[in-house]
Length: 214
Image (cartoon, rainbow, N blue to C red; front, side):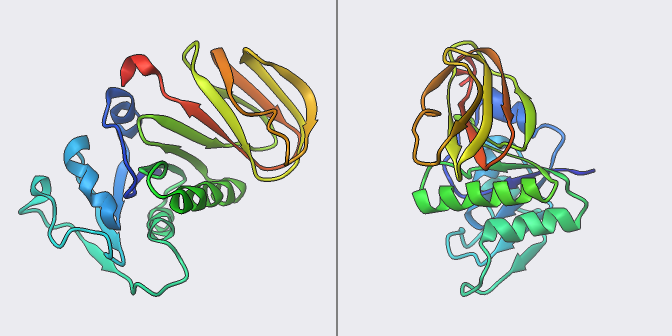
């Protein structure tokens, strides 16, 4: 099965929307991300990382179970999240959900967004979701994104954007070139499902979860 969830150490809201997104996915925990298994009712097939922020023992929900563990040195050139993503890909993962990748330390959240963009450009389907916010790397072309009416969203740019179009929003756009320094793409509001088209550039859609399901 190619659908995986990667548990990272950032905060989460273990609500019905997050549980639904996790349903049917194989699970790998990265370092302190193992702490989320109890709240989400999950059992990872692998626990990986340098374990500098992980508990010394498995959480009580996993006591008595044999969870394979891969340990890496603290001084390394890849994050624990990258190690977990590599492990998922080695097991056939092509559709990844990063849980606990947003919130918490800003530098960690930024690195997870960059990693998501990189992996999307390499051909993976990848999404970040913590039960509160959803982040989706945008690719050239059109993407349809389910959204609740009134949901707030922004496009976080990592370069100039060429030919940006937004439909299903309070502030639509049609083939607008948006420079990196512009904040035009911040704080929009969905009127229902969103449709976004981009002809060139790098950006991530940051969408607030459905407040009725938190």
